[in-house]
Amino acid sequence: MSTTPARPVTQLASRCLDPLHSGTVRKRLEYALVWPWIKILGLLPRPVARAIGITLGLAVYAVHRRLRRVAMRNLALAFPEMPPRERRRLVRGEFISLGRQLAEVCLFPRYTRENISRIVVYDGFENFERAYARGKGVLFLTAHLGAWELSAFAHSLQGHPLSIVMRSLDNPYIDDLLHRYRTMHGNRTVDKDDSVRGLLSAMRAGETVGILMDTNMTPPQGVFVDFFGFPACTASGLARIALRTDAAVVPGFTVWDSRLRKYILRFDPAVELIRTGDDRADIVANTAKFTRVIEDFIRRYPDQWLWVHRRWKTRPPGQPPLY
Image (cartoon, rainbow, N blue to C red; front, side, top):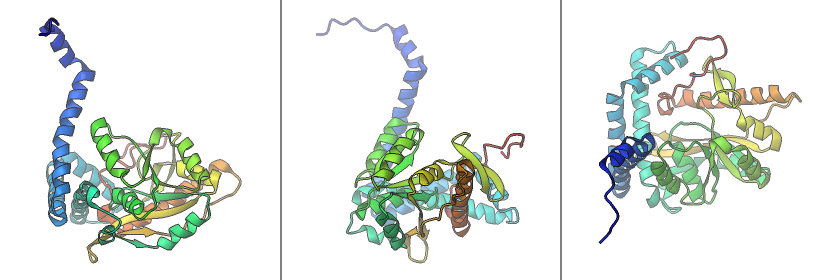
């Protein structure tokens, strides 16, 4: 029998009220809610899992007024001529796309090199091969469009693992679970806040790195370039690394094709870098060029981009907020 004295009630109460402890409890509860959904969806037949994922996405669309409001504001900025009814259709489509991707992520453990082609097909694979053969590394220029989680996963299953630059989730338990799914077949993750050294090392080794560069940034990590006619503070790291290492910058996006009922992993030819000898000007010019590539893809698949993100949150000095 233990002789340890009972912990005073006041001490227990104090611990429960401690912000750090209560935050840990909250995160564990969040994980306890998320984990069963991930496992259940992962066990169901794929059509059923995707139907449930889409239903969950539409449920969030129905109840989350703030996200709908941000998405509608973004669409009004990007497509001022578009009728509100069409904007609402695109926002709804975005949540369908997110729900579909949620199901695919849950199904990752069941995908193999033998069956992945039934889910994702390549378009322009020769563009990746050509860039990789240069031996100076490949930087995938991509965005939160379509099934971005599926891009790296499917590519690794085909024998082409890569590093993925991303920010860790606020919940470490969910982040750890997602990390295990992402890295099942050789992929690695690079923390967004400490990526420069890892990127330089990967390029020197001739490896491949995927970079999502369509989120709002703040100076000095970001520079202002045009995006749908408005200055958007955009990550300049991809341009800096490409100019420094001469790595190939290959646009790569995985989008849902409703006709094929599959995802298409599309690789475009490597972007030709702008080099004038003025380092700062070249960084801005190439970041603008990369952003135009992303905008072009969004215009082609407007119902598959992450409109709920406040992309124009950071404003140039003296300009009023857009949200």
